[in-house]
Image 1: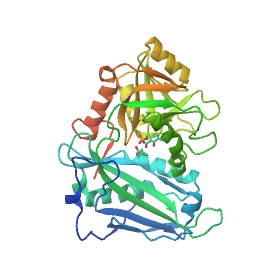
Image 2: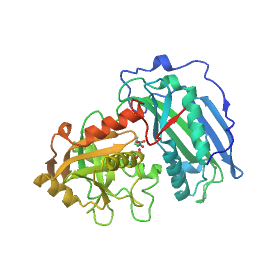
Image 3: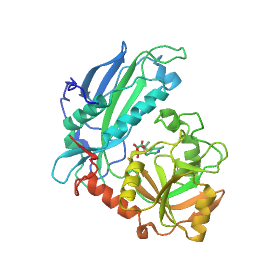
Image 4: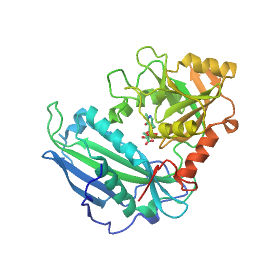
Amino acid sequence: MVSDTLDIQISKAATSRLSTINFENLVFGKSFSDHMLVADYADGQWQNFQILPYGEMMMSPAMSVLHYGQTFFEGLKAYKLADGRVSIFRPNKNAERFNKSAERLCMPQLPEDLFIQSIAALVEVDQQFIPNKANHSLYIRPFMFATEAALGVHPSSTYRFCVLTCPVGPFFSKNLKVKVETEFSRACDGGFGFAKAAGNYAGSMLPAKKAAEEGFDQLIWTDSREHVYVEELGAANIVFVIDGKMVTPSTRDTILKGVTRDSILALARSWNVPVEERRVAVTEVLEGIKNGKLTEAFGVGTAATITSIVEIGFNGEIFALPNPAKGEFAPKLRRVLDDIKYGRTEDLNNWNYIV
Ligand code: PLP
Ligand code: COI
Protein backbone atom coordinates (compact mmCIF):
# COMPACT_ATOMS: atom_id res chain seq x y z
CA MET A 1 0.00 0.00 0.00
CA VAL A 2 1.51 3.32 -0.99
CA SER A 3 -0.11 6.62 -0.18
CA ASP A 4 0.91 10.26 -0.35
CA THR A 5 4.08 11.25 1.42
CA LEU A 6 3.49 11.42 5.13
CA ASP A 7 3.65 14.87 6.69
CA ILE A 8 5.99 14.59 9.67
CA GLN A 9 6.85 17.58 11.83
CA ILE A 10 10.49 17.53 12.82
CA SER A 11 11.86 19.28 15.93
CA LYS A 12 15.59 18.70 16.18
CA ALA A 13 17.40 18.15 19.46
CA ALA A 14 19.35 21.24 20.56
CA THR A 15 22.43 19.14 21.36
CA SER A 16 23.40 15.69 20.16
CA ARG A 17 24.17 12.78 22.49
CA LEU A 18 26.29 11.14 19.79
CA SER A 19 29.62 12.00 21.43
CA THR A 20 28.43 10.49 24.74
CA ILE A 21 27.84 7.03 23.25
CA ASN A 22 30.61 4.48 23.58
CA PHE A 23 30.34 2.65 20.26
CA GLU A 24 33.06 0.23 21.39
CA ASN A 25 30.94 -1.11 24.20
CA LEU A 26 27.24 -0.90 23.37
CA VAL A 27 24.88 -2.57 25.81
CA PHE A 28 21.75 -3.67 23.90
CA GLY A 29 18.95 -1.14 24.21
CA LYS A 30 20.67 1.24 26.60
CA SER A 31 21.95 3.92 24.22
CA PHE A 32 19.36 5.92 22.34
CA SER A 33 19.68 8.12 19.29
CA ASP A 34 18.83 11.81 19.46
CA HIS A 35 15.24 11.55 18.28
CA MET A 36 12.05 9.52 18.52
CA LEU A 37 8.90 9.44 16.44
CA VAL A 38 5.44 9.77 17.95
CA ALA A 39 1.97 9.80 16.43
CA ASP A 40 -1.43 9.68 18.08
CA TYR A 41 -4.62 7.85 17.23
CA ALA A 42 -7.80 9.71 18.13
CA ASP A 43 -11.21 10.17 16.55
CA GLY A 44 -10.62 7.07 14.47
CA GLN A 45 -7.45 8.21 12.73
CA TRP A 46 -3.68 8.49 13.03
CA GLN A 47 -2.53 12.08 13.32
CA ASN A 48 0.20 14.41 14.42
CA PHE A 49 3.26 12.46 13.27
CA GLN A 50 6.28 14.12 14.87
CA ILE A 51 9.99 13.52 15.21
CA LEU A 52 11.04 14.94 18.56
CA PRO A 53 14.15 14.92 20.72
CA TYR A 54 14.28 11.58 22.56
CA GLY A 55 12.93 12.18 26.05
CA GLU A 56 10.30 11.59 28.66
CA MET A 57 6.56 11.62 27.98
CA MET A 58 3.70 12.87 30.10
CA MET A 59 1.15 10.23 31.05
CA SER A 60 -1.96 9.79 33.14
CA PRO A 61 -1.67 7.21 35.91
CA ALA A 62 -5.06 5.96 34.70
CA MET A 63 -3.70 5.32 31.19
CA SER A 64 -5.19 1.96 30.30
CA VAL A 65 -1.95 0.36 29.07
CA LEU A 66 -0.67 0.50 32.65
CA HIS A 67 -3.64 -1.49 33.89
CA TYR A 68 -4.62 -3.89 31.14
CA GLY A 69 -1.47 -4.12 29.06
CA GLN A 70 -2.80 -3.15 25.64
CA THR A 71 0.61 -2.73 24.04
CA PHE A 72 2.93 -4.50 21.63
CA PHE A 73 6.17 -3.78 19.79
CA GLU A 74 8.31 -4.59 16.79
CA GLY A 75 12.05 -4.95 16.28
CA LEU A 76 13.98 -4.34 13.07
CA LYS A 77 17.36 -3.00 12.08
CA ALA A 78 18.98 -0.38 9.85
CA TYR A 79 22.43 -0.93 8.37
CA LYS A 80 25.12 1.20 6.78
CA LEU A 81 25.72 -0.46 3.40
CA ALA A 82 29.16 -1.01 1.91
CA ASP A 83 28.49 1.84 -0.57
CA GLY A 84 27.53 4.26 2.22
CA ARG A 85 23.78 4.13 1.70
CA VAL A 86 21.44 3.36 4.58
CA SER A 87 19.08 0.41 4.44
CA ILE A 88 16.35 -1.06 6.63
CA PHE A 89 15.94 -4.83 6.50
CA ARG A 90 12.49 -6.00 5.32
CA PRO A 91 10.37 -3.34 7.10
CA ASN A 92 7.30 -4.50 5.18
CA LYS A 93 7.37 -7.79 7.10
CA ASN A 94 7.44 -5.94 10.42
CA ALA A 95 4.62 -3.67 9.24
CA GLU A 96 2.56 -6.76 8.46
CA ARG A 97 3.24 -8.33 11.85
CA PHE A 98 2.64 -4.98 13.58
CA ASN A 99 -0.90 -5.03 12.24
CA LYS A 100 -1.44 -8.68 13.16
CA SER A 101 -0.46 -7.83 16.74
CA ALA A 102 -2.72 -4.75 16.67
CA GLU A 103 -5.67 -6.79 15.44
CA ARG A 104 -5.31 -9.44 18.15
CA LEU A 105 -5.00 -6.83 20.89
CA CYS A 106 -8.02 -4.91 19.57
CA MET A 107 -5.90 -1.90 18.65
CA PRO A 108 -6.01 0.21 15.47
CA GLN A 109 -4.26 -0.73 12.25
CA LEU A 110 -1.40 1.47 11.07
CA PRO A 111 -1.19 1.38 7.26
CA GLU A 112 2.03 -0.26 6.07
CA ASP A 113 3.24 2.84 4.24
CA LEU A 114 2.80 5.03 7.35
CA PHE A 115 4.76 2.51 9.39
CA ILE A 116 7.59 2.38 6.85
CA GLN A 117 7.71 6.12 6.13
CA SER A 118 7.77 6.93 9.86
CA ILE A 119 10.67 4.59 10.45
CA ALA A 120 12.58 5.67 7.37
CA ALA A 121 12.22 9.36 8.33
CA LEU A 122 13.49 8.71 11.85
CA VAL A 123 16.43 6.62 10.62
CA GLU A 124 17.34 9.33 8.14
CA VAL A 125 17.37 12.02 10.84
CA ASP A 126 19.58 9.90 13.14
CA GLN A 127 21.66 8.07 10.54
CA GLN A 128 24.93 9.11 12.15
CA PHE A 129 23.98 6.73 15.00
CA ILE A 130 24.22 3.68 12.70
CA PRO A 131 27.45 1.96 13.71
CA ASN A 132 29.83 1.31 10.85
CA LYS A 133 31.17 -1.93 12.24
CA ALA A 134 30.76 -5.68 11.73
CA ASN A 135 27.83 -7.19 13.65
CA HIS A 136 26.58 -3.72 14.57
CA SER A 137 23.47 -1.89 13.41
CA LEU A 138 20.76 0.53 14.44
CA TYR A 139 18.01 -1.35 16.27
CA ILE A 140 14.58 0.12 15.60
CA ARG A 141 11.83 -0.32 18.17
CA PRO A 142 8.34 0.66 17.00
CA PHE A 143 5.56 0.17 19.55
CA MET A 144 1.95 1.12 20.22
CA PHE A 145 0.15 1.57 23.51
CA ALA A 146 -3.30 2.45 24.82
CA THR A 147 -3.47 5.99 26.18
CA GLU A 148 -7.05 6.50 27.34
CA ALA A 149 -7.33 7.47 31.00
CA ALA A 150 -10.03 4.98 31.95
CA LEU A 151 -10.19 2.05 34.35
CA GLY A 152 -13.00 0.20 32.60
CA VAL A 153 -11.93 -3.03 30.90
CA HIS A 154 -12.54 -2.13 27.28
CA PRO A 155 -10.37 -1.21 24.30
CA SER A 156 -8.91 2.27 24.65
CA SER A 157 -10.30 4.97 22.37
CA THR A 158 -6.85 6.55 21.94
CA TYR A 159 -3.39 5.15 21.23
CA ARG A 160 0.15 6.32 20.69
CA PHE A 161 2.59 4.95 18.10
CA CYS A 162 6.20 5.55 18.97
CA VAL A 163 9.56 4.58 17.45
CA LEU A 164 12.92 4.59 19.22
CA THR A 165 16.30 3.70 17.77
CA CYS A 166 19.44 2.38 19.45
CA PRO A 167 22.90 1.67 18.06
CA VAL A 168 23.59 -1.96 18.97
CA GLY A 169 26.17 -4.69 18.78
CA PRO A 170 25.50 -8.42 19.21
CA PHE A 171 22.54 -9.24 21.48
CA PHE A 172 24.14 -12.52 22.58
CA SER A 173 27.84 -12.30 23.29
CA LYS A 174 28.36 -16.07 23.09
CA ASN A 175 26.82 -19.33 21.95
CA LEU A 176 23.76 -20.36 23.92
CA LYS A 177 23.02 -22.82 26.68
CA VAL A 178 19.27 -23.32 26.62
CA LYS A 179 16.80 -25.13 28.83
CA VAL A 180 13.68 -26.95 27.67
CA GLU A 181 10.86 -25.42 29.72
CA THR A 182 8.42 -28.07 30.89
CA GLU A 183 6.63 -26.28 33.72
CA PHE A 184 5.74 -22.76 32.58
CA SER A 185 4.19 -21.75 29.25
CA ARG A 186 4.76 -18.69 27.13
CA ALA A 187 1.64 -18.95 25.00
CA CYS A 188 -1.43 -21.15 24.68
CA ASP A 189 -3.79 -22.20 21.90
CA GLY A 190 -6.18 -19.36 21.21
CA GLY A 191 -3.87 -16.92 23.01
CA PHE A 192 -1.60 -14.32 21.45
CA GLY A 193 1.84 -15.91 21.24
CA PHE A 194 2.00 -14.96 17.55
CA ALA A 195 1.68 -11.28 18.49
CA LYS A 196 4.60 -9.25 19.74
CA ALA A 197 2.53 -8.36 22.80
CA ALA A 198 4.39 -7.03 25.81
CA GLY A 199 2.44 -9.50 27.96
CA ASN A 200 4.19 -12.46 26.29
CA TYR A 201 7.51 -11.09 27.51
CA ALA A 202 6.20 -10.15 30.98
CA GLY A 203 5.08 -13.74 31.54
CA SER A 204 8.42 -15.12 30.40
CA MET A 205 10.55 -13.25 32.92
CA LEU A 206 10.10 -15.47 35.97
CA PRO A 207 10.79 -18.73 34.10
CA ALA A 208 13.75 -17.09 32.33
CA LYS A 209 15.13 -15.84 35.66
CA LYS A 210 14.87 -19.32 37.16
CA ALA A 211 16.64 -20.79 34.13
CA ALA A 212 19.37 -18.12 34.35
CA GLU A 213 19.93 -19.12 37.99
CA GLU A 214 20.59 -22.64 36.71
CA GLY A 215 23.14 -21.28 34.21
CA PHE A 216 21.00 -21.14 31.06
CA ASP A 217 20.93 -18.20 28.63
CA GLN A 218 17.49 -18.83 27.11
CA LEU A 219 14.50 -21.12 27.33
CA ILE A 220 13.17 -23.43 24.68
CA TRP A 221 9.43 -22.91 25.07
CA THR A 222 7.28 -25.97 24.50
CA ASP A 223 3.57 -26.36 23.77
CA SER A 224 1.42 -25.48 26.76
CA ARG A 225 -0.82 -28.56 26.52
CA GLU A 226 1.78 -31.29 26.98
CA HIS A 227 5.24 -29.69 26.90
CA VAL A 228 6.10 -32.23 24.23
CA TYR A 229 6.76 -30.06 21.17
CA VAL A 230 9.38 -27.34 20.68
CA GLU A 231 7.99 -23.87 19.95
CA GLU A 232 10.67 -21.15 20.05
CA LEU A 233 13.26 -19.42 22.22
CA GLY A 234 12.56 -16.45 24.48
CA ALA A 235 13.80 -13.89 21.95
CA ALA A 236 14.23 -15.85 18.72
CA ASN A 237 12.85 -18.70 16.63
CA ILE A 238 14.71 -22.00 16.68
CA VAL A 239 16.11 -24.08 13.82
CA PHE A 240 17.67 -27.55 13.89
CA VAL A 241 19.72 -29.41 11.33
CA ILE A 242 18.61 -33.04 11.39
CA ASP A 243 19.86 -35.54 8.82
CA GLY A 244 21.10 -32.66 6.65
CA LYS A 245 17.65 -31.02 6.59
CA MET A 246 16.76 -27.68 8.13
CA VAL A 247 13.91 -28.38 10.52
CA THR A 248 11.94 -25.74 12.40
CA PRO A 249 8.62 -25.71 14.25
CA SER A 250 5.82 -24.62 11.93
CA THR A 251 4.35 -21.30 13.02
CA ARG A 252 0.98 -21.33 14.75
CA ASP A 253 -0.91 -19.05 17.11
CA THR A 254 1.59 -19.74 19.89
CA ILE A 255 4.74 -18.89 17.90
CA LEU A 256 6.08 -15.58 16.63
CA LYS A 257 6.44 -15.62 12.85
CA GLY A 258 9.98 -14.31 12.69
CA VAL A 259 11.33 -12.25 9.82
CA THR A 260 14.78 -13.81 10.28
CA ARG A 261 13.24 -17.28 10.25
CA ASP A 262 11.51 -16.46 6.98
CA SER A 263 14.74 -15.06 5.51
CA ILE A 264 16.94 -18.02 6.37
CA LEU A 265 14.37 -20.55 5.18
CA ALA A 266 14.19 -18.65 1.88
CA LEU A 267 17.99 -18.75 1.57
CA ALA A 268 18.12 -22.48 2.40
CA ARG A 269 15.42 -23.22 -0.17
CA SER A 270 17.31 -21.20 -2.78
CA TRP A 271 20.33 -23.47 -2.13
CA ASN A 272 18.11 -26.56 -2.53
CA VAL A 273 18.60 -27.50 1.10
CA PRO A 274 15.58 -29.54 2.25
CA VAL A 275 13.50 -27.46 4.67
CA GLU A 276 10.86 -28.89 6.97
CA GLU A 277 8.40 -26.67 8.82
CA ARG A 278 6.53 -29.05 11.10
CA ARG A 279 5.98 -30.05 14.70
CA VAL A 280 9.28 -30.95 16.34
CA ALA A 281 9.13 -33.14 19.44
CA VAL A 282 11.63 -32.52 22.24
CA THR A 283 12.41 -36.26 22.19
CA GLU A 284 13.36 -36.05 18.49
CA VAL A 285 15.84 -33.28 19.31
CA LEU A 286 17.38 -35.06 22.29
CA GLU A 287 17.61 -38.42 20.49
CA GLY A 288 19.09 -36.65 17.47
CA ILE A 289 21.83 -35.21 19.65
CA LYS A 290 22.52 -38.64 21.17
CA ASN A 291 22.63 -40.53 17.87
CA GLY A 292 24.47 -37.79 15.97
CA LYS A 293 21.69 -37.06 13.48
CA LEU A 294 21.13 -33.59 14.89
CA THR A 295 24.21 -31.63 13.92
CA GLU A 296 23.23 -27.99 14.58
CA ALA A 297 20.71 -25.92 16.51
CA PHE A 298 20.46 -22.15 16.41
CA GLY A 299 18.29 -19.23 17.40
CA VAL A 300 17.25 -16.80 14.65
CA GLY A 301 15.93 -13.30 15.29
CA THR A 302 16.50 -9.63 14.58
CA ALA A 303 18.30 -8.93 17.85
CA ALA A 304 19.69 -12.47 18.15
CA THR A 305 20.79 -12.68 14.47
CA ILE A 306 21.86 -16.33 14.09
CA THR A 307 23.21 -17.62 17.39
CA SER A 308 24.30 -21.21 17.80
CA ILE A 309 23.15 -23.43 20.64
CA VAL A 310 25.85 -25.48 22.36
CA GLU A 311 23.91 -27.13 25.16
CA ILE A 312 20.32 -28.13 25.78
CA GLY A 313 19.18 -28.86 29.33
CA PHE A 314 16.19 -31.14 29.86
CA ASN A 315 14.93 -32.35 33.25
CA GLY A 316 18.34 -31.90 34.86
CA GLU A 317 20.28 -33.60 32.07
CA ILE A 318 22.60 -31.68 29.73
CA PHE A 319 22.82 -32.57 26.04
CA ALA A 320 25.92 -31.10 24.36
CA LEU A 321 25.81 -30.26 20.66
CA PRO A 322 28.70 -30.59 18.21
CA ASN A 323 31.11 -27.65 17.83
CA PRO A 324 28.99 -24.99 16.06
CA ALA A 325 31.99 -23.50 14.23
CA LYS A 326 32.09 -26.73 12.22
CA GLY A 327 28.38 -26.55 11.38
CA GLU A 328 27.39 -26.78 7.74
CA PHE A 329 24.55 -24.25 7.83
CA ALA A 330 24.62 -21.65 10.64
CA PRO A 331 28.01 -20.11 9.70
CA LYS A 332 27.05 -19.96 6.01
CA LEU A 333 23.60 -18.50 6.70
CA ARG A 334 25.15 -15.90 9.00
CA ARG A 335 27.68 -14.92 6.34
CA VAL A 336 25.25 -14.77 3.44
CA LEU A 337 22.55 -12.91 5.37
CA ASP A 338 25.12 -10.39 6.63
CA ASP A 339 26.44 -9.90 3.11
CA ILE A 340 22.92 -8.96 2.03
CA LYS A 341 22.18 -6.76 5.07
CA TYR A 342 25.47 -4.87 4.78
CA GLY A 343 25.21 -4.53 1.00
CA ARG A 344 28.25 -6.67 0.15
CA THR A 345 26.32 -8.81 -2.29
CA GLU A 346 23.42 -8.36 -4.66
CA ASP A 347 20.08 -8.13 -2.87
CA LEU A 348 18.31 -10.64 -5.12
CA ASN A 349 15.22 -10.81 -2.92
CA ASN A 350 14.74 -7.05 -2.55
CA TRP A 351 15.04 -7.27 1.21
CA ASN A 352 16.88 -3.98 1.71
CA TYR A 353 14.69 -0.89 1.89
CA ILE A 354 16.98 1.98 0.96
CA VAL A 355 16.37 5.11 3.04
N1 PLP B 1 10.41 -15.13 18.77
C1 PLP B 1 10.42 -14.21 19.75
C2 PLP B 1 9.73 -14.53 21.01
C3 PLP B 1 11.06 -12.97 19.56
O1 PLP B 1 11.06 -12.05 20.52
C4 PLP B 1 11.70 -12.72 18.33
C5 PLP B 1 12.36 -11.44 18.10
O2 PLP B 1 11.82 -10.58 17.49
C6 PLP B 1 11.67 -13.72 17.33
C7 PLP B 1 11.02 -14.91 17.58
C8 PLP B 1 12.32 -13.51 15.99
O3 PLP B 1 11.59 -12.65 15.16
P1 PLP B 1 12.32 -11.70 14.11
O4 PLP B 1 13.20 -12.55 13.31
O5 PLP B 1 11.19 -11.13 13.32
O6 PLP B 1 13.05 -10.68 14.89
C1 COI C 1 13.91 -8.59 18.46
O1 COI C 1 14.74 -9.36 17.99
O2 COI C 1 13.55 -7.57 17.85
C2 COI C 1 13.31 -8.84 19.74
O3 COI C 1 12.21 -8.44 19.92
C3 COI C 1 14.05 -9.57 20.75
C4 COI C 1 14.06 -8.95 22.10
C5 COI C 1 14.96 -7.80 22.29
C6 COI C 1 12.78 -8.92 22.79
